[in-house]
Amino acid sequence: MIKLLIADDHELVRSGIEYILASDREIEVVGTAASGEEALELTESLRPDVILMDINMPGIGGLEACHKIKSRYPNIRLLILSVLNDGPLPRHLLEAGVEGYLSKHSQPTEMITAIKTVARGECYLGNDVAHNLASTSGSDSQNSPFDALSQRELEVTTLTLQGLSIQSIADTLGVSPKTVCTYRYRIFEKLNINNDVELTRLAAKFGLINNFDG
Image (tube, rainbow, N blue to C red; front, side):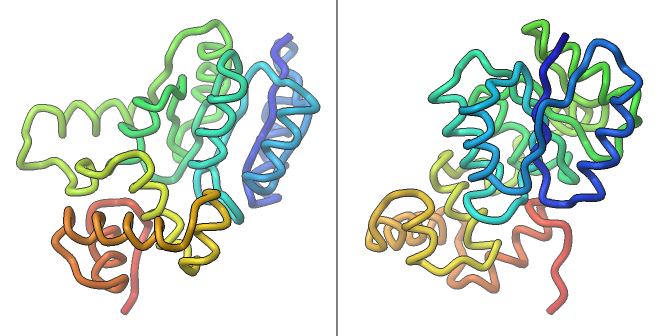
């Protein structure tokens, strides 16, 4: 039996996934989390085999939660379930050690296959995710400018796009506000931008966020 933890901030999504998996005898949903912090707490107490993790969640979010879980519990398998199937996030997360990445547009049968695949210790990429990674790897001109960011810089970028203040980002990542400012300077320099509005527009253009009106 595969012990699964679901981490997503939308109750409808969590309930829907539980309903889909209820008839599968090989998978047991042992818990659900609505934030990165809750995912960490439940990972500690439940020790699931696989975590189905959304990236955009309140608090520290899925990106930082993945980083912390992998550093503390390297044997727990992480399967990302996200609306973002292109841009730099899939590549960064795979490089950081997650075992799978699946689009929320995937069919329920593919999600079940992905869970069982990563539980066996294998890697799984959703069809659309794999296609996007393959199409960008062949041409440097198509690569996202966010690919130039380090893992920590991408974390700061993600938290900034979630609207967190410098102090809140510092508290979330366990660093000083001065360190966050240093990361932001490097991010702006690498992306050739000057402010958060330009960052948001660039993130929308390259798929780091869904859309931006303004």
